[in-house]
Length: 178
Image (cartoon, rainbow, N blue to C red; front, side, top):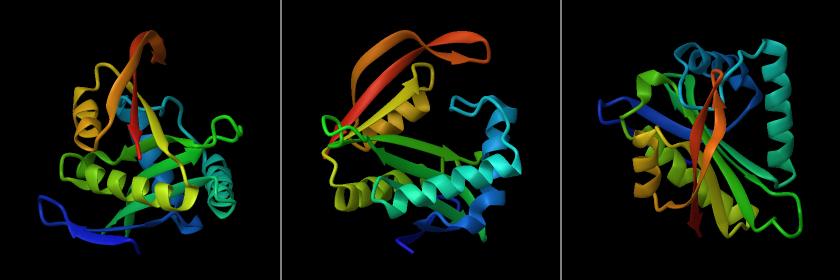
């Protein structure tokens, strides 16, 4: 356990590392994002087998020092996950790619901010990276605002850089120097 805190609504949250037993909760989380057509990478539902493989691969990356995957647990359920994956190339291995997803029921309660802060701290410590990079839909103003609060700066934009349910959307690239 890395951190415990209460949300703005008083829910108890634990932030900890990913484990195999998170499979069903994360499958439900990911597939719920597909259902709501959220501004995330979730565009096709996963099967239980696909999620098991994803978790196995993620745990392997953690073990090899190539990634950090943290879970936000509320009432015994994994309701959020944040990750930073270190680039493999020697030219790029000083930087990591950030991602986060949260269940709708805990958004806007400070969980994302705490989860992001923890994953960045762990990545700096264990992955020894110097730069964290993320990509976000230009339309996702709430996420962009959160990223800016955490210290990310917009460094670029790719017009029609993301495909979202059959339509092209503009993409913002953000970085945070550690």
